[in-house]
Length: 280
Image 1 (spheres, rainbow, N blue to C red):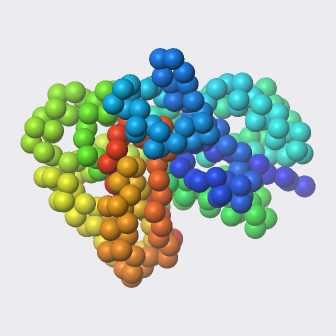
Image 2 (image 1 turned 90 degrees about the horizontal axis):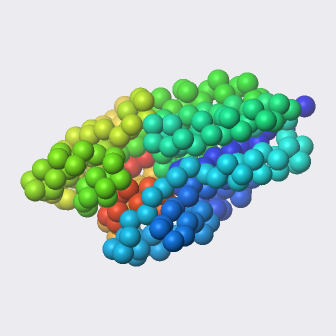
């Protein structure tokens, strides 16, 4: 009989209550300062990260190899026969590859690493469906077959107050970022099929950027019922206001506000507002 463990990393932005509810095994990314480093979400909060940015912009790194090894040992010790990982995009992190290599040392555990090609709640929403399928008794084979189809129905979009942090983190060209700042251009950023950031559309100023997010949501809802998560990082008031405006739109089957974690916050800076949309 199959006993399936579900693994995800802190790029998924699922909160502790949800992780515990579905007994997900959690791999924290690392937030690295000159004099210290922290386990993402476990040892540093988004608020603490934002407060530190004026003094130092930390680097981010994939989960520690020994932490991954210990997690797999724990999974085996608890009698699991199979493990499915829903990992942050390999285009943004080496987490999936590191887990794949370390899992080779555990031949008795049949492991499938799914590269979500996304992050934050788009990644988290895929993990949630996998968790629900495990809970309902679906087989390992059924779950891994459906994951790519779920990913095709899942999208994420966000806008930022400033492009400075993406520039400093090497996630966007310095020249294009500087020109955008000068013209007060606020790009709507999404992730392509290769799991890399790209500019979905552009707006002039913050108000127009939020309006563009509303247009994107309307487009999705016009063709299908959708689950919706409003993403925010240091922009809770704006997220709440956006929630009130869109919460009763037809075709929304779920809507909530999700806070992005420190690892994404390093590259976004305070002021991220976005959407995760999953077509039912």
